[in-house]
Length: 311
Image (cartoon, rainbow, N blue to C red; front, side, top):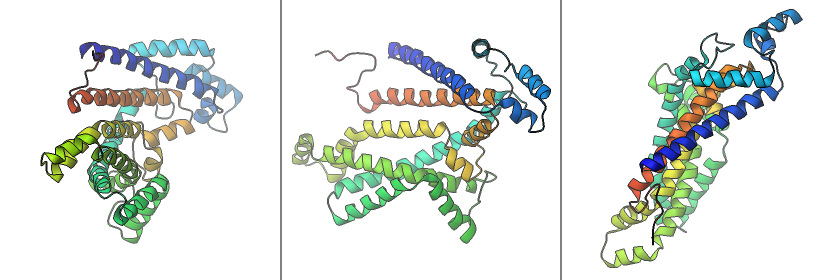
């Protein structure tokens, strides 16, 4: 286990480094000039030259990359052009909001999608299961921005029972959470149904049924236990994606998270802020995937991380 953890740690560091380096190059190749965004449309050529010199943008790309690597080693990610504050501090101040939204959305997803998927598997090929399948396909087909706008219109305008935007109260978390969870519930419930149908038809379940195991035990102790790893993998992957920022949802609900911060950073070509955001969210996503891998050996004792199974 220790050897596996060390190897995964090395892979994680390399993954984050390559991700940030790729973003460093791509944002500088993209159209747009940070100096123009910072100085404004009325800036003269001399003003733009001063701004580029101030931010080090007048230096060759390799020189900029070398300075960037040096800053990574020292933990200094530069000063945000638009906030005039350390870029890492700006990102870390927004990260708790994104983690809060991602955590609430994944909890709602798990609490609804897993029982729904099990229910669909137990009633496979029935009219009720067909109706549930239609609903999940509809949920999977709806874009998040459309779902958000519809929920916003219904519960913040037509029946104003929930805040329309921001996070002034915990009620402001409800609509963004539901908007994110609708798509995830549709995806995860269909995955649970597929895995459960396969396990409910497996020979080992027939043996367990012949031994007098109850329907509840057959469903949850046997079939669901053997479906847990792919379901956990899907939940972990979705959660990691949410930690990277649910951009559309955060913009629709003016949620003060990382996703809306990225939009502002891209609009202003705020290089240090983009780089710090990518670094933090990539590290968080890699950490989530690492914890999911460690959970495999807990769910299935036959799995030995870091060791080949000898026969």
